[in-house]
Length: 426
Image (cartoon, rainbow, N blue to C red; front, side, top):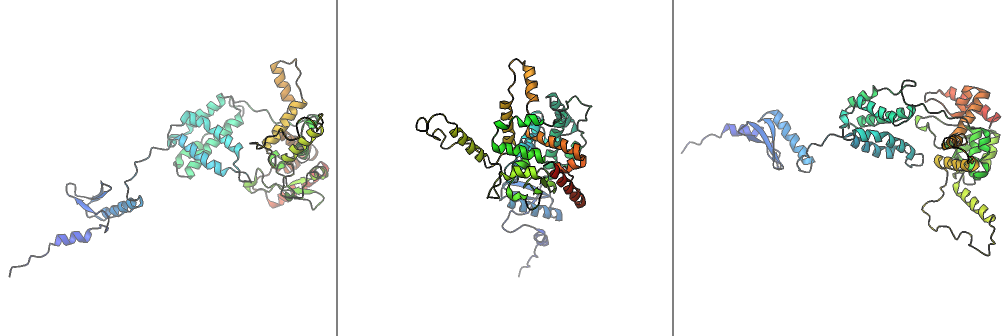
């Protein structure tokens, strides 16, 4: 009987160390190099010295990543993120983040962001975001100064650009070193730059305010009077609703549904005195969720007044309302916005203050500037009056200029000061 040869021990040892996963590409030896290799999507992947634990680990990782990709080859390495691509990604995020209390996109803030990103895109759009540093930010700063922007505006734009890279760092789109470098860049200092200083917002004389009353609707005049008596911001007065006003006491307390510092956890309480109450009471509605100053009511009243002033007998001429568009693309909203409120005041100023014909262009521009005002100036007028009569602390309280870390005791004292101001002024 012939002697039976023993089984090859090396073959047994090879099987014992083979990490191949059943049903998947196998772990193999590349004889020429002595390395382990696996073929995925017709491409060989070398795993290091054959038979070592490290090569086994790389094999399992390669198989797992390949399966996760749907058994497709790896995508080619992407080009580095450019500054322009980073700006677009930030804008997409900002459109969802900067929203008002009604969930609508804050177009004003988005406009500021776009204007700040414009020189960034024009000068360094193709530059890799990872290569953007303080020197390039300095070039953008000087570009803004050369465009004639004021020093605070340049500083705000530079701050917004820095915030873009801070956001990118949080999203792990760039390394933290890029943003850290930009934080070392300083803003422009007053008196140490060629950028002009903006003219301070001045208080508006009472005569200029009273002169436009015949040229505005009852609702706009109500907004103006309420602002004059309370000093609230235009964005706070246009969103007044009955449900946001506590009328239980002799002094009413208005808590806006949304205000400038709400995201910092600060409560805004505006105290309405007897004069302000008289103005607001005229616009109170049975529906407590309705806005007090409604542009639709203003338009209806305007049309009614035009009909009442009609000279042609109603039996002849156009029928009332027949010349209106059936489906207009734009119509009055349920409330004013700060912009529409400001436009109404600007139009009224154009009608109330007609420039003399004998002025030169320069003189006419100066005259128009002297006879125009904006709603936010009413807030400055109120602040000037309060500070003159009650001091700086009272003005700070009445205007809602508080810090995020104010203690509850200080807030109560402030509310008492605001009540005293409202009782004597508003």
